[in-house]
Length: 340
Image 1 (cartoon, rainbow, N blue to C red):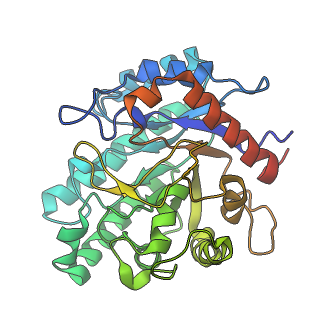
Image 2: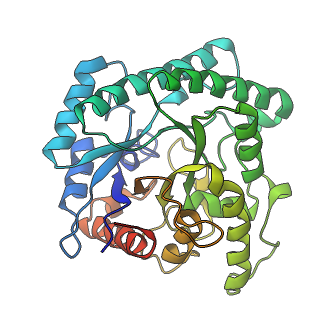
């Protein structure tokens, strides 16, 4: 049995797509309770990746807030891993104030991370960002807006460097300027900082191969027959070969080949349950395309992997069985592609 990479759950699915125009938010304590209670063959989650978003966390709470969070997570015998910076208070493109706010949110996230690193409750992970901008807005001036995104990301990288942190761009079709795999690579190359990389989520990256929001970058053929697994494997290999060298954070996930949005969240990759019969991915096999290089050797590029259950319904999320099934799938991935 492998013991690396460590296995984490995400807490932000209790927030993303929830709220007044959708279902009620699920509290941080409830997310931690269900994570800590999950167990398969004596194996439990090692930690959680945190979204530093209200009401789970007040980014303005400083060291007192960071200490309270550390104490809470530790009380469930869990570690803290990657962090989602609340950059949607601003934007990586747009007016100067929005871009300044974006960078400030990264700084405050890094300050919290520094406390958790010092106290030892956080020993792995990155700070996750995206462009905090819609695809439609980006498309009004692709060249100019991408230039602004690059400059904002460079500023954010320079701030994160002071704290020893790496930033990971979330690969998701709903974020302008990074809504296709080729755009992501263009942005990463233009940012040209050693402390930035890519966060791959298997649910979102499947949509990259299908060309949602960027049909010119589609890899799978139009009207693809999902029964022909060899075509999908080839497309995923093209995608992972291009993005794997940049990948510094990884989410195991399932997707049924459709897009989905709830509440105020734009449509994006649909996160399916681990055992969803409509899932298009062979989760364990396809995870290996990210965790191993082109020659099949382990990359060991990150010390933990995470499951992101964004926009699961509250009914699904409140069932302990859901989290046991997710943990079981993560264990299978680690047994197939992990190490001791």
